[in-house]
Amino acid sequence: MPDSEDSPSSDLWPVDGWDEPGDPIEEEESHRGAFGGYGGESGGLIERTFRERIILVGVTLDGGDDEETHAMLDELALLVDTAGADAVKRVHQRRASPDPATYIGKGKVQEMKELAEAVDCDTVVFDDELSPAQQFNLEKILGRTALDRTAVILDIFAQNASTLEGKAQVELAQLRYRLPRLRGSGRKLSQQGGGIGTRGPGETQLEVDRRRLVRRVHKLEADLRQVQSHRATQSKQRSRTRNRAVAFVGYTNAGKSSLLNRLTDADVLVEDRLFATLDATTRRLPLPGGETVFATDTVGFIRKLPHQLVTAFKTTLDVVRDADLLVHVVDGSGPDPVGSMDAVRDVLEEIGAGDVPELLVFNKSDRGDTSRILAERYEGSVAASAISGQNLDLLLEKIGDRLRSMTELAELLIPWDRGDVLASVHREGQVLSESPEESGMRLKARLEPASMGALRDYLVQHESGSDAPIEETAPS
Ligand SMILES: Nc1nc2c(ncn2[C@@H]2O[C@H](COP(=O)(O)OP(=O)(O)OP(=O)(O)O)[C@@H](O)[C@H]2O)c(=O)[nH]1
Ligand SMILES: [Mg+2]
Image 1 (cartoon, helix red, strand yellow):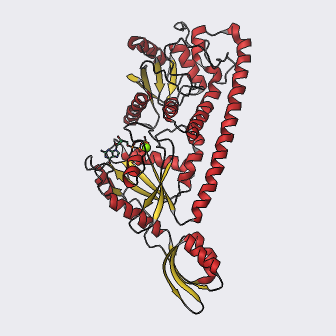
Image 2 (cartoon, protein in one colour; image 1 turned 60 degrees about the horizontal axis):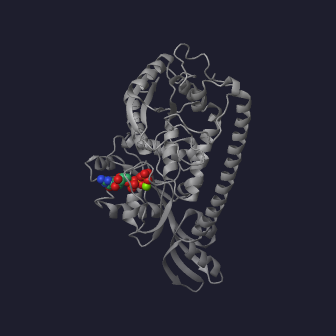
Image 3 (spheres, helix red, strand yellow; image 1 turned 120 degrees about the horizontal axis):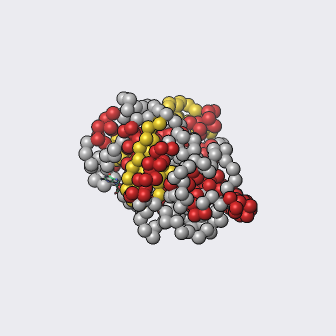
């Protein structure tokens, strides 16, 4: 551990940076807090041979409020716990803006150093994203691993990834997080105290490491592109059939998988744990109106979801963007249902799914009244419970209604020599009635607006779906 007591900022990483010796990837670890290994080929960021002791750090910036910062720290504590470590203390500071070198103020860093020694912590975790320079400097002063929320979330994802695709996506996100931080990995420096003399060879090793990582990033990107093109073919096949797609989205731990399990015979893992689901699972879901839709369970979202993960999970999240309807599952019994809804909508925006129609479900209605109260406040929404089964029939009905409201009811007269058109109506729409006439087949069908265009010439009458789209009736 470097002795930085007397001049804490003399040899810190300036914001524009200079080259420091890099860490070889398979560096031998002797520092106790191994939380900050930034993944690597083993996949995990956290030392799990013992439970690391962690100090959480939250900063309220100008315009923010303390209560919100503390709620974020509660959630960060849960994340740290899920990752397999213990949050033992919290540090909070109010600042006009982050310090570019250390995020919190220099005085506060010194205070933290003493606290870290007093409580014997291994790692400090900031709720806000640290720049590589800030991370480097903090580790140097504190002599401990300094991480941010992003790193913890990446670590949980790494632990939970099970399929090849999921693993590739998480590894890609970790590498993208790790690349800019390669030179700033403070563990090596904290053991060597700066290592000016090793800069030459260090740089060489750094270049080698960086090239290797970049190569790996390209390989993973190519692999994932292939999965994506395979999936695009599948979804094209799906769109040729009549089944429409519904994606279950929502904050992590809201109960998406529980609902899908309860509604279909899906056997998705349910756990009282953040990010239990990473891979999309699709099941057929029969609706009360007789139609069957494809229902997909998806990865949960969270406040400050790392951008690297959103990018890496693009292929998985395509399913959300391409859905006809999103069933947005909210934990109605949670500490801040409206805040979590907003966070989910932000991520939906970010992945280009902001325009997909949404049906709100306030889940966990078996746990008190808030789900019901929220459902009354948001028109068109449902309060339900995946555990007690309350209102699940109503939920299915609403899914059917919403999907039908997006279709158009049409009466068509298709000449006998256009068997191909008749076949396409059967394929793309839901035929309600058919009666043969001299000039052709007269039929009533529900069709998506997209199919309607090609059938213009055969249209006798048509009306759009009647149900109005969901609208919030009260501000949050
Ligand atoms: N009381 C109650 N608990 C529920 C209900 N639905 C889900 N849970 C519990 O909430 C926890 C999370 O459920 P999951 O279905 O795994 O939640 P998820 O949204 O799929 O979570 P991630 O995949 O981790 O994002 C589990 O412990 C469930 O048993 C409900 O209606 N009532
Ligand atoms: Mg799940």
